Amino acid sequence: MYRLYTRVAASTLQAALARPAQVALPRCYLSSSAEPPSPTADLRTKFPHSTVPARHDGTVLRKYLGRHHGLPTSLIHRVTKGASVMVSRDGGATFTRERDLYTKLHAGDVVLVREPTLRLEAVDVAVAPRSISQWARAKVTPWIVLENDDVVVINKPSGVPVHGGTKTSDMDNVVELARALKRSGYEEPPRLVHRIDKGTSGLLVLAKTRQAAETLSAAFRNREVEKEYIAVVEGKLPQPSGRIKCDLYRAIVRNAAPTGPSESASTAPPERERTLVVTSAAPAPAGYDVHAAETTFRVLGTAPPLALVALSPITGRKHQLRAVAATVLGAPIVGDYTYGFRDNGRNRPLHLHLYRLVVPEMKIDVTAPVPEHFMATCERVGLSGGPVKIQPRAGEVEEAKKKKAEADAVKKRRRLPLSHRDRVV
Image 1: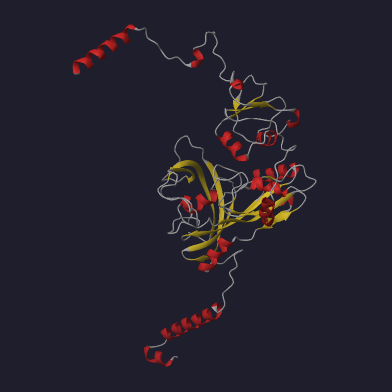
Image 2: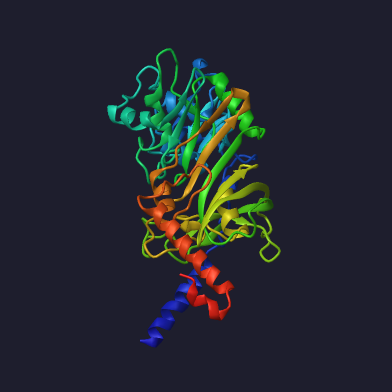
């Protein structure tokens, strides 16, 4: 059996050596033409595409895909982040990948999506708008804390994402729910000009007109907006107040434990992108984009091991407050399992709330009520300060006075000589 195998192998090797050598060349060099063909020359024959009409001249990419083709927000973000969207500025001769959702398109541009199963049909949401359910209107209306001719400000609850994603439905996000806030006399529903994390609660500003959106976007970009967050943190802070300047970068970090109330040891993702603080002991690896961050903080109240802190970001880096609280202050935010908070139940929402927002350019100065889960934690441990006002329960005032009187009596007895201590009642 061994000899037969050897003979077969030898004959096969001889036949292979008798054949002329074949080298696998790159596809672009297999053409008979002298000049290699353009890699985007035949993309329009393989993938869906559309030409921007004149009525959409100046429209940003996100709105064009959403309005003209009726694509859901979650799909638009997925194909854009995956580098599947390509734009041609010369009528389809050459295409370039486009990751910026807010790049402006012009009449005659060709938009191509590298998704063979996708169908790009002109449906124009303005002509055939999707119906807005009474459920959406009833859900988002109680969130309104301020509304005028230019803006509408809402108090977003914790757990509601700003944009749609793979883990949320098409309607369960602020962008889609804002469609229910469209008023008569306005061409389109309010649009977002900034964002906060899914787990963060608090104020969100939506512009009702294009001019208001441009003014607000410039104010946020130029750091002219005052934002004050309040957070419940676990740990002892190094000082009552201060200003923190540090460098941050984003990196993939392996999870060693479940990272949230809905994740168990078997369902938690093995890796997750996080914001990391650059320190002398842990410098940023080569090739990572490092951004400067600045934050001010002040302690509003303490109830060890918890503390109530006011945080004001000067810069607007992703997860800036969460990373700074956990790494620089050494006190992770309650409910922030991604950045080091741990407890037995793993069922607490994030205790980070955008409490106050000031936009001098638009004469906006608004505050948001503290959410119920935030107040429940503060009441349970007796944590009070700033906007968190804990009303004493019935009998607590009398009990506190009694304990103080007993403590004063003990101190008085200790100051007396031993022979006179028994005389003090």
